[in-house]
Length: 118
Image 1 (cartoon, rainbow, N blue to C red):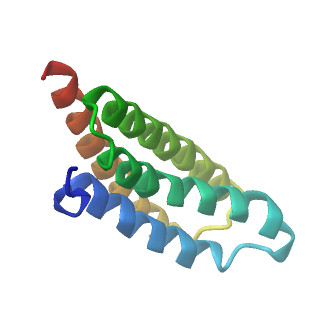
Image 2 (image 1 turned 90 degrees about the vertical axis):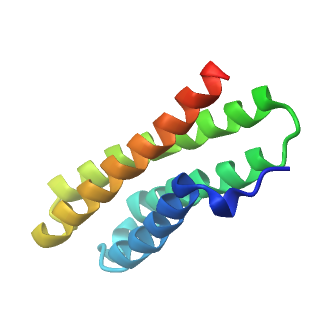
């Protein structure tokens, strides 16, 4: 079994969950069961899939869960874009989030690529 706590991708994804929960608190109440809920589910899905994949003994299965995590991360990034365009997110927060998304995507993508080569 792999130790997901040692993965930079997990650390970044976990931090992103907290940021998403904090920013979605300020979304309009009529988005509670819409964009707010969807973004939170997508955010939690990223580190959750990293954790679940780390319990798999097969590298193929592990890789599959990391790819699912990456898909959820890209989905979240798109949802964030929608929320930004709807002006649900403050301008100053957009820059910080974009930086976090890009770093998390790069690190997780690198991990996936390294496993494909192994």
